[in-house]
Image (cartoon, rainbow, N blue to C red):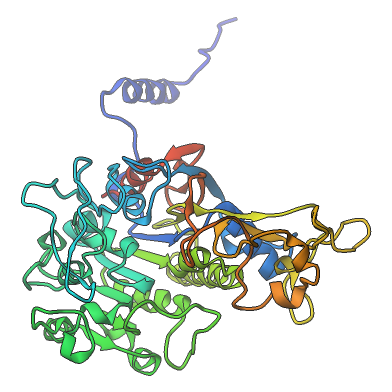
Length: 482
């Protein structure tokens, strides 16, 4: 009996072809065409993991989920800067955007750049650059790479658009406080414009900070006689200064959009008047409408910036509400992206924070459920999980679930004077939670703990483990084909 070959001729050819392919020096990679056309980078400023946990309990209870909790790929990110164990927002966001470690206060520059305080006028307004002619070199940002590839680019924030986090995407400067110079970097063709943004510049810029675009005589902080809003309008930017004007703009029919809704930072979400200021979710989705007109795709950075400010104030309720507003923007963006790209095959969405804060969850509190009328939730005092009775410290006084490592509210002496502390006090909108170390009002510090990163969409599975913030840059760059 004749034995038959264990494979047919066709299979033999297929195997030979496979062997040849495997031995080729050309690596097997996804084609550039398969890379995500759209990247949305969400940054919760100061949103450490304890703040995320507290916001989850605040909004949906201990066993609920925020949108960011549902992201399929996750990692931890190390946040230290070039010269400090605890970073500020400038070098941390810059590390995400450029892949370069730099010193605290420095925005998207080389590691050797020194942070030199700006020159100020008699009123303390920081006006003039004092960086020096040979103080470092610019580090290219992801947003600039996107523009160089022909993609559209946008920046959305609840802070001043000239604040550290948004500025790190489109400006290069030795000190984050040079906000007049940062504003000028966003005006195509104007003095001080960042030419790395190309001839067209940012396609969308939304947030607060109008004072750095207008002159002193108009209530602003510019001493150079320039009206940057007028200059941007002359470059065909549609402009909105309030919700009414913003809502009247059809993003699908707009090529460029500038929105400056407040003189300084936008309001905390807890205090926001919807008739005057759009929500972060509304700004995000309209930005997506404008940017999506480019068939090549876009890069959009969205910052929930006032989380950080509320934590500096140790007003936890404001911080948690702003975290929820940030999460709502993520939810809205994912839903909108899926309308055009149901499986997110050409979209990468990354959610992370630049650093954490010193917020802690105290004691062995019983489960509280979400915060609602009649139930302060995580904003209440610690109640024993067995008896339900408020636990007491060694001075015989109750204490709140949320506290801070440092902050302005620290009792000078025995806490026995706070024996009557109750949840109507601790859950108030403006209550400053107690701190272990007393510092000046509004001066609670950042923390140095690793932060959360979540991702969804094309290339999201490359984000895993514990990584440095500079590594995030290369992962986004590779996944997006920039």
